[in-house]
Image 1 (cartoon, helix red, strand yellow):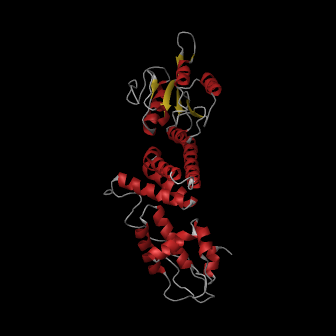
Image 2 (image 1 turned 135 degrees about the vertical axis):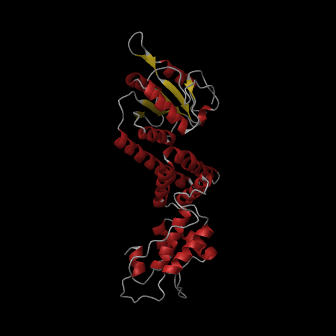
Image 3 (image 1 turned 135 degrees about the horizontal axis):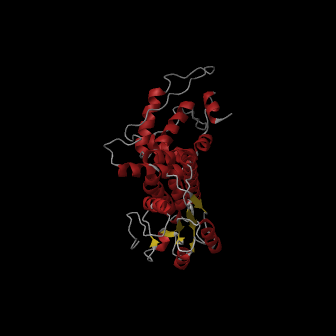
Length: 352
C-alpha cells in the first residue's frame, strides 16, 4: 500500500513514510510543524503522528510553493489557507471513497510567467532560490520542473546565464564550505541540468536539422571534466540549426588535432574551468592547422571559453564573454566559413 492509499484508508501515514514520498527529511517535516503549524490536523495521544490524505496534500503544496521560490513562511501560509478551504468539514466514513482533491490555485505573489510589473532580475533570483531549495530537498521532480519552466519562460541562453549557472555556483559554494556534506545535492542538480540541456539539443536537431555547412567543434581540454557549459552551448547552437561536434570532457591532444584535420570545422571552442587546464600553445597549434586546395587554404577560428583562461589572450584567439556571445560568434563562423576577422560585432577580439 503506497502513501496515498494508506492515507485514504483512514489510517494515515507516518512522518517517515511521508518524508520518503516527498524526498525530504523527517526533520524538515517536524521543523515545518513546529515553526509554521504545518502538521497533522488530528493527533492521538500515545501514538505516532499520522498524516491524512488532506495533510499530505497540504505539505505537497508547501513543497510546490517553496520550489517556485516563495520564502518558507509565506509558502506555509498559502498552503494552510488552501488546505483549510478544501479540507472536509467532518471526518468521512471509513467506507467512503473521497474524490480527487481540487488543483491548488496558482499563488498570486509569484506568478509564472512573471507579470509586467515584476522586474526580470527579481524573478531570476526567485527561481534560483526555488531551484536550490528543491535540490537541497533532493526533490528530483521539482528540480526538473523548475529547470524546464526557466528554459520555457526565458529561452535557453537567458535561463542558463541568469538561473542555472548562479544556482550551480551557489550549490557548489555550499558544498565547498560544508566539508562535502552537500556533494549529493550538486550531483543531483548537475545531472538534471545536463538532462534538460540534452533534451533541448535533441529538440533543436529534430525541429531545425543540422544544416549543410561546416560544423563547429566543442571540447574540454585535457584534464578538464566540466562539460555543462559546452552542453548548454551545444543545445543553443542546435536551436539555430548549426551543425555541432561535441566531444565532451578531457579530450586528448591527439584526438583534438585529428578531429580538426578530419572535419575541417568552421570554429573550435575549447573549455577550461581552471588555470591548470588552460593550454594556449595547443590553441595556437589548432589555429595554425590549414586545409583545402592550394591557393585557397583555410583554418578554424579558435574560441577560449571558460574562467580558466583568465585574462590571457593572443591575436586571432577569440574570447567570448558568456554563452550568448559564444553562440553569436559560432553562428557567424558557421555562416562565413573562412578565416577572416570574426567576433560578435564583426571585429577582431582584443581582450577577455
